[in-house]
Picture (cartoon, one colour):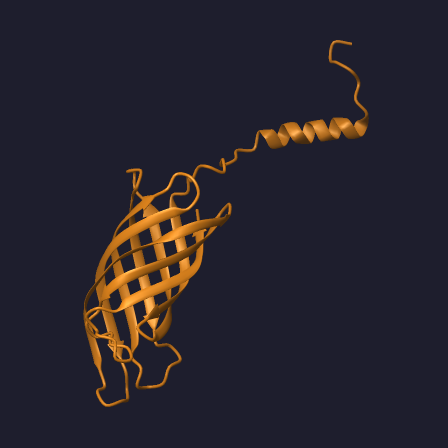
Amino acid sequence: NTHGPKLPPGARFYSATEEMLAKVPRMPDDQDNQAARATISYRYVGGIKGWEGAMHVKLREPFLGVEGDESHYGLGANSTIPRSTVVMFGPRFTLGVLGPKVFAHALIGGEHSANSGGPTPISGAALTWALGGGLDVRIAPFFAWRVAGDYLKAPTLSPLGVSPSTPARFSAGLVFRF
């Protein structure tokens, strides 16, 4: 017999399945070949809670990408709390070959805030920008958990006595890596 020892039927099935699975391409645990990341996060800025949706796309450079960020604050609050929408874009720099990814970004865009009550009703739009960064920690092959913080310059976003020129914003949420 030139084909080796004869295997029982169950062993032949196992051997064929093992050979087939060995041909399936896999991403090694220590590499991150995803070209993009999308995240949905809980956001907190100066007493106002909200949510954020963001997208990061890698460029050809190893650490450079482009990020877009849309945040909404004050949803479900009373009429004295401003409801704000912030939309920004800009470069993002990511470091980390193995394990967690540390990133920094510089974003610029616009914001609109409005409230219908309180001592000083506001309704306005303005140029806004943010400098910040965060950490993505992988929790599954295509998912990570993100914590991030920014220095946010949003002139009409003036939550609960926080200076509108220097609020910090913080977030935590799930990242889908693809």
